Every structure is written in structure tokens, then in C-alpha cells.
Image 1: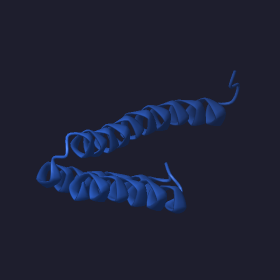
Image 2: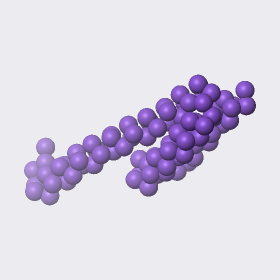
Image 3: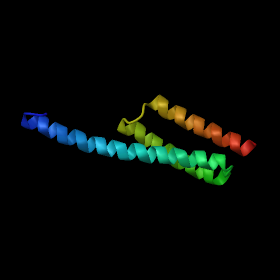
Image 4: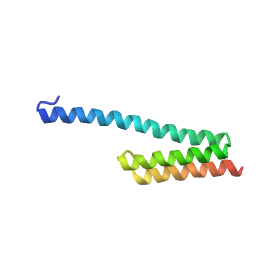
Length: 89
């Protein structure tokens, strides 16, 4: 348990940041699932819209420090490949 005033404040801030990160990570996962669902349903137009939204959310995750840039690039690459496979056949 924090004893000093500074440590108590840092604990409060850490909890606020943790909650914000959890919420954003959930938003990112939901965006990814929308793309996967569109690919599974072979919905090309909806998939492209969902992919653009997911890319934006993933990129915001990079700037917030939630995901590494290489991890984000891997997510986007795999989502795009999944959409491409679904549209081709």
C-alpha cells in the first residue's frame, strides 16, 4: 500500500490509466472481430469498411502505447489477407 502522498497519487493515476487502456483494448478487439466476421460472411464491401475502421483503431493503439508497431502491422496484414482470401474465393 502506498504511504506517501506522491505514491498515493501515482496509484490513483495508474488505476485511471488502467481502466482507459482496458476500454480501448476492448474497442480494438471488437473492431478486429467485425473484420473477421465480414470475412467469414464473405461481405466484401462491409469488410473493407470494417478494415478501415479497425486499421484506424489499431493505429491509435500504437500511439497510446497499447500495442507495439510490429504487432499492429501484423494484425493489419493478417486481417487484410483474410479479407482478400474471402473475396477471391
